[in-house]
Amino acid sequence: MTTLVLALAITGAQILLALAMGCAAFRILRGPRAQDRVLGMDSLYIAGMLLFLTYGIQTGRTLFFEGALVIALLGFAGTVALAKFLMRGEVIE
Amino acid sequence: MTRLVPFPLLAAALFVMWVLLTGFSPGHVLLGAVVALLVSRVMLMLGPEPVRIRFGSAIVKLAALVVADIVRSNIAVARIVLFRPAEQRSGFIEFPTELRSPYALAVLAIIITATPGTLWVQHDARRHVVLIHVLDLVDDEAWIALISDRYERLLLEIFV
Amino acid sequence: MIQAPDLPLWAAIAVGFFVLLGASITLVGALGLLRMGNFYERIHPPTLGTTLGTACILIASMICFSTLHARPMVHEILIAIFVTLTTPITLMLLARAALYRDRIEGSENVPDDRIATAAVDDDGSPT
Image (tube, rainbow over all chains, first blue to last red; front, side):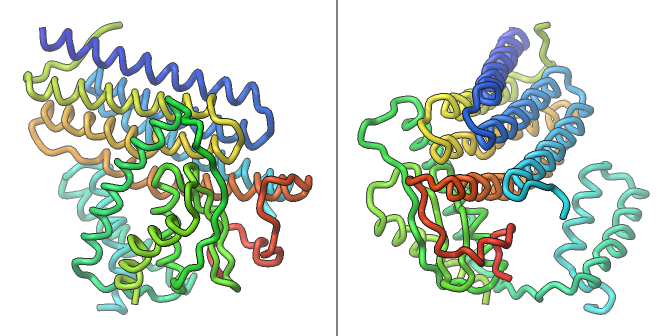
């Protein structure tokens, strides 16, 4: 019983996070400007990282934690590189 | 001691990170200590400005204040997003800061940006003015007084 | 696939509550991306997800794994520290990039560049 309720709660949270990823993806597609798209990508990475963490809770495996850490790292590096590109037109000077 | 471990805080942080990532086995604790000692020495080559922190009640007070403010402004921003009140308008404010230490400025930047509803945009090192974007801008002066009373005073106490 | 770890009642309630709360806060933040009018307003709501949203889900994860392994598991704190330190950097860079582009186009709603030369540093710190 407890397990079932918990499973439903986690699945509900995953649906909410997937919706959040959908909102971010909409912002990436719609723009209107490049900085909006980059902002959408940043939110997409964060929501994806949280979704990974909920999968970790669901399966009880710590493997997902490392995946989440890697997603966070890649999201940070990607957003910084893109923001720098918007400002200067090149990433590494 | 300072010759052996030039950056004790950095070394401690690296050690804790290593142990948390690998688990508490004796081998990894030893390896983590070695890595922390060697890697923190790399910072010697960069020659950063020495950071002077006064450990005391001010740090605890600031941390508690920031956590409370993050929760409060989360609720405030959520209300703005969900209900879009008509009187809400956003804008930039210029915050004249008394902080000079780059570390204190960095901490203030993290606090202001991590609190939803305010965003640190630019710092003018010459005029000592910070450009901040505020989502719910009712009164410029009120925001400036708030930031200066709540955070800046404590940061001036912490970073001597 | 509906499944969940086998937790005692109090832990199950806490984990379920925090997971749902964190996910809802993140969703509200993402909705803000859609509903806000201009870029500088849109950049605020995602911080909901990176502060309280992340914190709630990490607390849930800590409770879950600490109960499962019967010892304190706090490695999630690494993600919390990492996200807290990196979000200001990305948002600050992004806001400055947007400001720079708006100024170049001569947009009216942005403050003018009184700090033209100082604006060259891109880390926000004084040089």
